[in-house]
Structures are given as structure tokens and as C-alpha cells.
Image 1 (cartoon, rainbow over the protein chains, first blue to last red):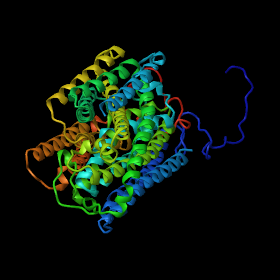
Image 2 (cartoon, rainbow over the protein chains, first blue to last red):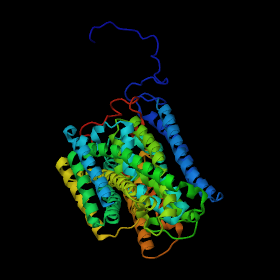
Image 3 (cartoon, chains in turn purple, orange):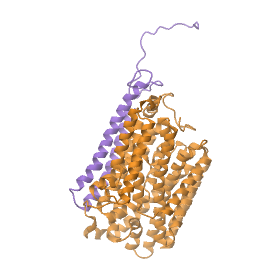
Image 4 (cartoon, chains in turn green, orange):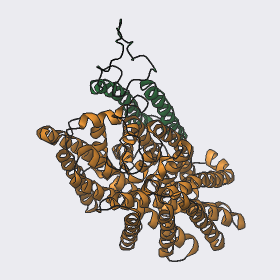
Amino acid sequence: MTGGRRVVVSRRPPVLAGRGTPCPPGDLPGGPPGGPPGVPAIVGLQLRQALRTVGAVAGLLVGVPVLAARVPGLWAWVALSVAVQCAWVGLSLLQLRRAERLER
Amino acid sequence: MTVAVLTGIAYVLVLGVMVGAARPRRSSGACDFYVAARAVPPWWNGAAISSEFTSAAACLGTAGLIATHGSPMLWYPAGAAAGFVVILALVVAPLRRSGTYTLPDFAEWRLRSAPLRRFATCLVLAVGLAFLVAQLHAAGVVVRLLTGLPPWLGWAAVAVAALTMALAGGLGSVTSVQAAQFWLKLAVFLGVGAVCWGMAGTSLVTGPVTWLEGAYRAGGGGLAGAGDPSLPGVLSVLVACALGTMGLPHVIVRVYTSRDGRGARRSIVATQVMLALFGVVPPLYGILGSVHVRGAAADEIVLLLPARLLSGAVGDVLTGLLAAGAFAAFLATSGGVLVAVGGALSACVPRPGMRSFRAAVLAVMLAGLALTAVTGPGVSVALVLLGLSLSAATFCPMLVLGIWWRRLTDVGVAAGFAAGGGVTAVLVIAEEAGVKTGALTSCPAPVAVPVSFATMVVISLVTPGRVPRVVGRMMTRMHVPEHLAGPLTYRSSRGADRSS
């Protein structure tokens, strides 16, 4: 139409779905071109990871005070309450690392 | 002692006002005022979040409850910190990527409903006032107990300093003050605690700490279940803490001050580390207080401890330092609440701007002062728990379902707000009126949260026509990381993107 030279495309361009490869606007890994269909897959992965972390929190939050009832002794309770704080830091770091890895 | 206490308080207030007032030159627009230009680095942001979260309840109330209600209260700080892991897992990055400023903004953006925004603003006001009144009452307790002056002087001191910070430079000012004050608070409470422990530690380890044996006991709690030493009572409070933190307006506004979702996540991890450091404070003072300060009210025990262990000038200086640390806590939380609630309120007027923001901040503080004047000083933890319970029963379901479930509707959320908030109000009023319904309902969260979730889901399912048409684009914007999203799916938050 513009009078330019026609170019024959002999093969399809490579799929941009590799780890760390930037996608064109709107396209998402795991979904067809156009974007939106890829989002449920991302949401599903993120949600599974989030629920694993929340499950661990719930287990510790209920489990440690219940278990503590079997360990009478002030200093054991103090040690457990400090240990739980350290567990929250560990869980946070784990969640951060996994969430960032999922989004890479 | 009066001179040392007043000097400590004056130092913190003047420092707060000076650090806060140094910021306004850089505050040029609404974005700067509401969310500190979205440029707060994670460690700075983490210190600010920790500072406003370690309020009167964490610094004075929890240690007092450990001393007066026994070792089951040791779990309260652990429950409070657990809320941030839940935020990190479920809320923080999607909420930041939504590009909104406040919880009502998010409600309007996600569900396309202005009336819902107003409903959410009312709840933000209720939760914020519970925290603000707790700080003002605690300031009055410190002033009355340590100097003999009337409590209203303490309220006025916190009110004037917090207003100056908030009106001068919005969240930018408040962030600077909070972050600086967190380290001051940590140093003061750990330092003074270590000295007191050194004076009394040997007798504690070898002698009997009879009151603090590791065991649950039957017994009722106060307002919102605070101080219930039974196992169900403790678990109820932990649920409220873990789920309610995500809906605290002054905490969640910090998510928006980060540069992007990644920065917001790292801010929460930094908060977790700092809260773990501060988590040593309540057990330390609680154990010491249970032995050396008998018969005092919960919020007074920490303040009375140094003078009971060390007589003379050293005890006075340590008490002055604790008073300064306590006022740093009141100021940090009050400033955060003022900016967060003021920002939410001011957006409800037809033409929101800095003038309406300042008017809203002033109105919130006046309302807080009025409520403080007509209520008595109770245990600060109780008011904070009331705010956490209301937040868990309303904002927690909205945020979790709004971020992860496409079929949520505005009608469903409004019904969930009414059901969760209503159940919370009914249970609290019934408990206060003397109707005992058991330990699991003394703190309303274990009942109100499932009711609110169920209501939102059921009503949303029966109103499918009200699901926003662009929900797919919203989910993309919230969940797709910035570096993978194109210009159509992600818009970085700049300028006036309040509810785009």
C-alpha cells in the first residue's frame, strides 16, 4: 500500500514466556496474547502461596498457646512468646522470597 | 520527679514538632500530603509503621496486663505481630498496586460505589477514634500519675503536637517523626528495662513469681475481651489482632507510601523485624511489675517501676525517660491516626484538597478530645482491641475478598459491613451491660468475622449484576507485578490517581 518492499516471514517469532523475559504490554505469562486470560493463573499461584503462609500463621497462633498449657512454668511461656515473634519474622522472609520468585 | 518527667515529655514534643515542621517545604501537592509522595524507603517505612503500632497499648497496657492478669497476656504481643504476616501474604502488594490512597478509596475503586465509600469512611472514623482516645487517655494518666497535674494537660500536649505535625506536612511530616521516635522508644524502653532488670533480676530468677505461673485461669475480660486469662479468651483476642491489623487506617495508609508493591512488601518485613525487637518490652516490664508494683492500674505499672526499684535522682531520671518514651508512642500513633482518618474524611467533600484535609484533621482531633472528656480512662489495650475487632469484622473481609474474589459486589460489602459491625456492637454492648455470653464472644471477632465474610459472599452471589464491568482489569492491575504489566494494565501512582 505504501510501496515498500514486502518481507516474507519464514517462522513465528519466539514466545516471550521465559523466566525473567519481559512481556509485551497486555501479554502475561501463562496466558494467550491479549493479557487478561493469564491473570487468573497468576492470581491462583499467588493465592496458593498466600494461603500456605496464612495457614502457618493460624497454626502457630492457635497451636502455641494451646501447647503452652501443657508446659507450665513462666520462663517456658516467655521463651515461647519470644520464639513466636522470631517465627513471624521467618515466615515473613519466606513469604517475601516466594512471592517475589512467583512474580519474576 | 516532676522536673525529670516534664523535661522528658517536653523534649519529645518539641523534637516531634521540629522534625515534623522541617518537612513541609517538600510537600507540594495532595499526593505528598496523603501518602508522603509515595517515596518512603522500606526501612524508614517499617520504622514508622512499628512506631504507630507500638502505641500506648503496647508500651504501657500490655505489660500492665501481664502484671495484673497473669502470663496468658504474654500472647497478646505475639498476636499483634501476627497481623503483619497476614497483611504481607494477602493484602500488601495488590493494595499498593491498586494505586488508591485510603481504605474508602479502595472500596470505591474496587466496587465502583460512592455510597460504599461513605460507609467505609464512617468505619475508618470509628476505628481511628478508638485508637486516638486510647492515646489521649494514656497521656492524661502519665501526666496525672507522675506530676500530679490535671490529665487534660496531657491530652492537650499530645493534641497540639500531633496537630502541628499533621497540619504542617501531612504524612511526610508524620513519617519522619514516627520513624525517628521508634528508635527513641526502643532505646528508652529496652535501656530502662535493662537497668531495672539488673536491679531486680537476681531476686526474680531465684525467688517465686507466684502470680505469673504459666497457666490459664477462668475469669472474664474487660471491654472487647481485654485481659481475659482463659484460653478461649486469649484465642479470641489473638484472632482479632491477626485479622484486624489489616484494616487499621493508620497502618494500611503506609502501604500506599511505598514506591511499588515490592517496596510495600519489604516495608512490612522490616516492620516485622522491628516489632520482634520491641516484643521483648511487654514481658520484661510485665514480669518486673508483677513483683515490684502491686495494686496499681494496668497502664500505670510500667511508669511506677523505676521509682520502686531505684530511689533518688536515678529513679527520677529513668521515670522521666519512660515518660518521654510513652509520649513518643502517643504522638506517633495520634499523628498517624489523624493523617489517615483526616485523609479519608477529606476525600468525601466535592472538591478534596489540602484545605479540606486540614479541616478534617482538626475535626478528627476535636472529636477525639470530646470523646476523651466524656469517657473515663480505662485500660488502653481495651480500646485498641475494640478498634481491632471492628476492623477485623469489616475491613478484613472487604480487603481479602476484594483482592482475591472477582464476584464481590458493593451491596455484598455494605451488607457485610452492617452485619460485622452490628454483631461487634451488639456483643460489646451486651458484655458491658453485664450479659455474659462466654469467653468466645467477650472479644467479638471470632463471631463477627465469619458472619461478615458469609454475608459478603452470599449477598454478592445473589447480586451478580452489580459486579463492576471492569473487574478483570482491576484484578490485572492488582495482581500483575509492575515489571510484567504494560501501560494498559498498570498505571504507576502519581499525582491525582486517587480512584482511577
